[in-house]
Length: 450
Image 1 (cartoon, one colour):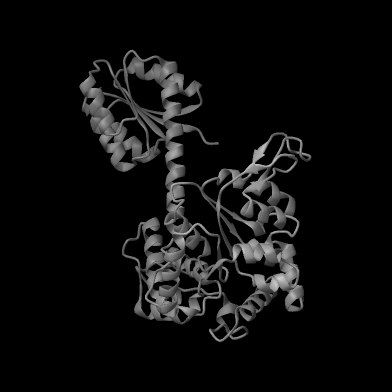
Image 2: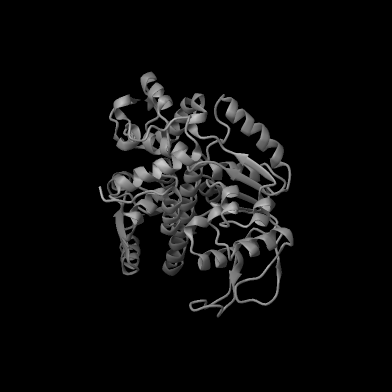
């Protein structure tokens, strides 16, 4: 871990030396200055994590430096020191963004506590900012575009959002099923409660069971303490189970029980617990086929599929693609600080004509890559880097293909690109290796070295 860097602005040489030595002993890196001008120059050179500034200075005052720092980076905490503190001065400083206001002579241990708390607050703000940015990137409006397919989805979802029944969202990988689930929760009767999501394909049977239902201390090796499950966390709210088709058959009865009876047991527990949740499930699989093949329980399927919704693939809503591309590129441009970034008309046409087997997720990846690598403000067709084999003729994805045919073709494509290595192909496809082996067997795909 790198040292925390503190900008120390104090014109009294003895006080400056004392505070600097104290902070250095506490493992801070200190950049010490005596004037406002020195502090401004040092700020750009060192980019501190926090600043401690005296109020009265030879060429200005602490409020000026406070304003300068907050204009440059609002996240950097600033602590002001003064020998002549007044309530009015303290109020003004806090209004301008000071994180604390201390009077001299300052107790050094108290100053250390104030700095540590300010840095912790900064870390929390940064994490929240990153989380908000990620959410804005990932949570596109699920109803962008003028297509009839998206208009139908919008009309259906708006009606269903007001109910409290389970919803099954079907659609190919990358179409935005999670975005639609979150929108349904936010616009539903439980919007003020928790929204908890889990990708069921990411866990083994044992881990998935403890994630969903929790476990008691000593329930298995390594269970050193009790752990609540997601159904407890989501009580009164919504739980979104993505790729529910990958839930193990041994867990499905417990899932059915909590949906029908609102009762469940933690792993290793003998009494029932209560959880009232709304379930939204999603899958790219044909669950009816899975039921027929005894890979999914029929009673659970009928319980969760009362209200099915299908999210159309991008190739089924081509007129929406330019609108989605503009939004995605706009978000990326803001992240990169390139507000003039745009798609050339010929690029929009190429983007619209491409079949997008990876749907919105693939569209985002292609546009973000182009935005990062392009040196011009206008993204040209030559800036778009599609997967070579996908863009070629070996697997001509088009709207005449069934979902099953597209899935089989895409798995074959990824396996070939990975030289027949199932483990790396599974990672790229975002599914467990066991699920990929199941698909290989189901589609009778020959796995060979390229």
